[in-house]
Length: 73
Image (cartoon, rainbow, N blue to C red; front, side):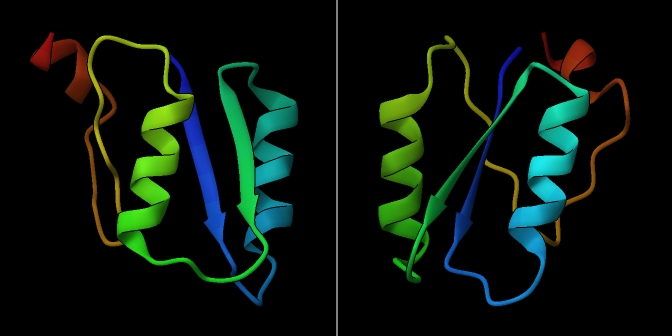
C-alpha cells in the first residue's frame, strides 16, 4: 500500500502535518502544489505518481473504517 498526499496550495499547517505523518510511516509520500490547482489537476498528478493497481481518492470529508481496504480487497 502506498499513501500519496498532495497538498493543493493550502495556506494553513496542512503540509507540516502531512510531513509529520510521512516521517512516522514509510508508506506515506507527500507532494505539494505551490498554488491551488484544483481537484482535477491534482488527481491527474496523483495518477502519474501512483504505482499501485488500485486507487482510492480520499477527500477531506471522507471517513473510512480501519479495515476498509482489507474488506474491499
